[in-house]
Image (tube, rainbow, N blue to C red; front, side, top):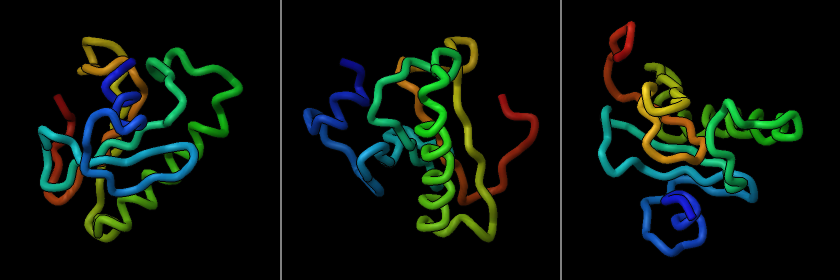
Length: 112
């Protein structure tokens, strides 16, 4: 089981800010911005490159809920960044697809 599967199964505690049948959103334990939340599909998909056509509805739900969570966290007006890492060179540290919601400060471009 990945770290996120253990959190979803409540085997590891987390600061959960949103949950429904398909996704769970939690605060990152090593934040890179004043607001840094991860939104994770409950279905384990290792990374976006391994998603299948049948995951289309879940992926759309993930993005729409990320926007909803960002608004709930007060980021709608100032803006926020959504990040999905794919593979070790992109910074992927847990092989379970997830989206970072980063905000609460001005974010530089290009990242990395």
